[in-house]
Length: 449
Ligand code: MLC
Ligand code: AMP
Image: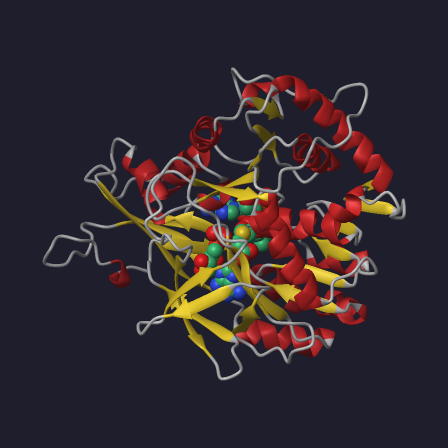
């Protein structure tokens, strides 16, 4: 799957830069090969990686892939409840990260001598990504090398992405966007990567790349920083994804940079299934045509289903009712298809999946933590529209001991931060006497926010 990285005729130039640290192609193969050698000794169980934005994470992830050991990237800010769940649920047998964060798991240290790649099985699980559902703790999404490669080849074709490009982004390296597209993409295509550690407009401006990736929040911030935006004029492509790009942001970015952002659409479960091609005219609000051999289907109610080589084959260890036997995955997004075959994402079916800053957060996951507080009797978590984040998380709570108590919001935000990833914290906590409910007793979330 890492074709360009493993091509012995490829140039030994800086392949991956993360902040101030850079690895050449040979340097990365050496660093990753040392992890691969160590992993050969820990056995075939998945390796979980504390996925900070560092070259060490890059080496560990690539090392797992070279060794043929499934890699489970773990958000470095995940609280203990979330982290313990991911480690247990994935069946991880080894850990790259601080020992105290994964008690009981052997810590993998790079071996003295690098190992070369193990025999590659394209149908073996290469990565397990965790993503939120509407309720419960995050679910594991296994991807094979074949599926990931199909996704990346489709995008390389759509964007005419070649080794002559330099990719720039600063997205987290534990999700589909930052890790698969943003790291495995350059290693498959052979284009150098400049990872800016954080996706700040100033860092994007000084990186001088040709292709830039960002979530809409990043583009919103770029648009508010005209001098940095102007530095992106020399780029070839600005790509947005992971959440809807507001028309106002699309237009501001185009005016300041001279580039209409190319939107693409995907999901942790499906890979990137729709993309605006580099040679198409990008239109605000439209996310493009099927990637590679992907097929899409939109029913009378607008429900979007996708099928193709990058779509997963089911959650790890649990039923996957949204996946049909013949491979169609019902995304939960509502879409329309234009006369040119381009797709527009109109909304989501469930209010319980929130997208904040491009992160997917299940309302139920946050509600469960809030309900663990002794004074919280009822909780409803919603995403309310936010210019910068797309949606911001607001929690409504009910409990006789809460009303009028000073600092209750900080206490509940801290409780969430203590258990789950930082971006799952509510931005605001509202104490109410009662939650709006319908005749069936179900909370009417549309009346909140
Ligand atoms: C945040 N903060 C809070 C808070 N929430 N403080 C108190 N209470 C809360 N509830 C803090 C933050 O920790 C931060 O502190 C500061 O407030 C600013 O927070 P922010 O406004 O959220 O900004 P930032 O931290 O800069 O995050 C924005 C962002 C980030 C865009 C950088 O959201 C991000 O990296 N998003 C990318 C998500 C992503 O990659 N998704 C892809 C999923 S895959 P401090 O101290 O740190 O400044 C997918 C499929 C596909 O979707 O199609 O790609
Ligand atoms: P995740 O599971 O984090 O991979 O999030 C997937 C969800 O992000 C999709 O189901 C969509 O709701 C949303 N999404 C991703 N890309 C886009 C886009 N370009 N436009 C609108 N929504 C998007």
